[in-house]
Length: 197
Figure (cartoon, rainbow, N blue to C red):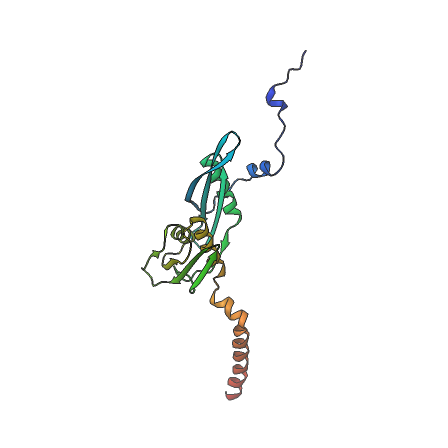
């Protein structure tokens, strides 16, 4: 009997970062939105090699959001790469009702994004890229304005930097030591009340 081997049996398993990247399947958490897709060109000896760059935002609508760029020879592969990276690098930030806790300016490269809390019912008043990030994060009422470059990638990353800088009232009080002072004041008031009774 002869043992015939098929070509598929001789193929080795992929090794390195690419193999790991293909094995990692993105979690089902959150909604994916394509912000921008651009065609790129690399000039080589024989002419030009075209590729695609995709800018993606992933958010769960409850104060958790991630943004990433993916590059590949096909649009779908670029989107898949970006989505995987965005899910890995998601950030959480404080939300007060349906808006942000305080005014903030985020900077990335030449882009600056100014954001301010808004009254209920205002909606998301922002440009295209910034709006998609804020909506994916679950913010429904906010005022935002671009103060610098209008590059979509830098604007989106500037928005992420602003969201990273947001702090809740409780965390600020803890940093300042107000929470401890308030607890000490209450502890001192109780013995005084007991003595009065």
